[in-house]
Length: 337
Ligand code: TXA
Ligand code: MG
Image (tube, rainbow, N blue to C red):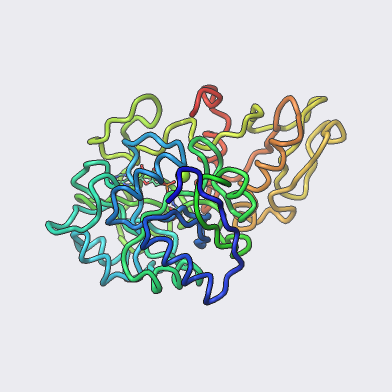
């Protein structure tokens, strides 16, 4: 693969799926849609390809990757499933749930992908393009979100091109992703399981299957992550960062600001907003999650002094949406790589 690849943006056809699978076999990098966000895929067994992937994203190498597989049987070759993990996989795979498990003894995934940890993050995506690509490639694919490190996750192929054109080989354009926020990450390494990252599957849905409350992710998620600590190290405060300052809980709009609205009501001074985008005029959290990253990107590009964000409910998918918004608003974000 050349140092600066020409990035091919391909419509999804049987031929482009084959091209993408062959690119992965050759050690190349392929961005593809999942139901949550676009992922940047590499052969999970190829350490050179994974090193290129970290370089393309500008991602700190200590940050381990999620391994994507076709089904639970394929996952069982890579990680140890306790009873809770079996239950969650049976109920929610394929779907927006990542399980962090003890790595199996003969796990063929490159050490670089798991950042030297004894654990592995596994996910079975529920998107026809992701599933076709996994089937055509026939082996596990590592895939972080297909954005430059520190940027918001892509929910459209043009977002991927904006961040990674000239740095990766292929982008499969499967249109907008359905869920819009990343998978929920649950560590099944002891009892009770721990929610490492709120995401596209709600806490309530997970707890209903487990019949016990999830343990909290108590370790610090800002500053230097300890890769041995039971946290998702990618959850740096600055992870989801537009360049424009983000002002949360806005009940009014100041001159010079743009507005990220939610629901049917307009805040005081809404007429001041140079631009307004509404996550969901009806106040629907599913629709809001699907629009979140695309709206943040669009408002970030409008040259405003700040993005004023109206308050959103914290229940259901609101937990993941508010988590991503807090990270987008974090003070240290412009220091992010
Ligand atoms: O929805 C998603 O999960 C998307 C799509 C593409 O599948 N992927 C995604 O990957 O969000 P990424 O790399 O942006 O986030 C993966 C998260 C990071 O926070 C990482 O630290 C955590 O998973 N992670 C991976 N392996 C881990 C492990 N063994 N223990 C704890 N956290 C882990
Ligand atoms: Mg990411």
